[in-house]
Length: 293
Image (cartoon, rainbow, N blue to C red; front, side, top):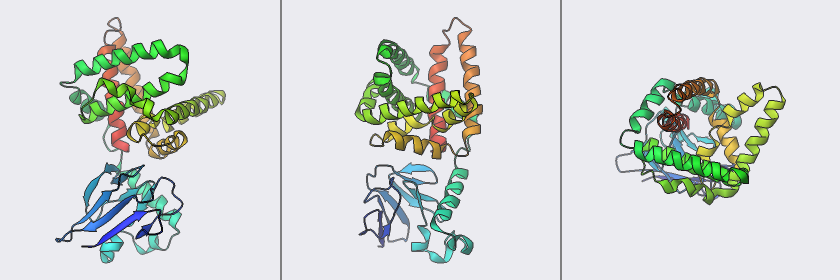
């Protein structure tokens, strides 16, 4: 069995430098008796991804793109150099250009689900979970209203908890009302990202609105990133959101127009439709995040 460790420590077989999102002992590759190749994450801070999907353990196929933190690994060349998916021209390019190439390749694999399908899938996921979703929405709205006099100091943590809950609904991963309070476990990141986001958007409005829309689309995944990665920093979560949204901002803008339409429709019957519309919107947003991460 062949085993290769990956991380920033010099003792690793594959040493990653100049990437603060990679842990010291991030993950390892290994083969079994049948020459299948596996990747296993070592409880890293920022995760291991195969074709854009976060994994703990996974078997790799020849064309799979493996990413640790923000670095793409040319794993195939360590096991099957004769069929490595990198061509000679790419091998001759500097490391940054290689990573840019694979970053673009990885982004092309993401966000393939249409907006209408994401919303339809969200509706299906809510089957059997409507009561819990509506109850959570009401509680979140009340707590946000009550805590609004404290400014962002409570709201920021509730936002992270809300994102965690809707992700659990979207993934059918045992959502609970208590998810609302998990954001307090990442309070520095929650508050820091919230304040930075507010400053960025305010600056965008000062620059005549369009920059605000662009930056809002760039950093819209921040709360989901913190919800899934409690140890990530506030500024780092914004950076990760910006990179995640690269190539998907126009799709998100069109997605947001659908959200506005849903809200308008829900307001018509005396606002009662919001009890259905808001959970649908929130699960759809979680689905959007899953589709591009």
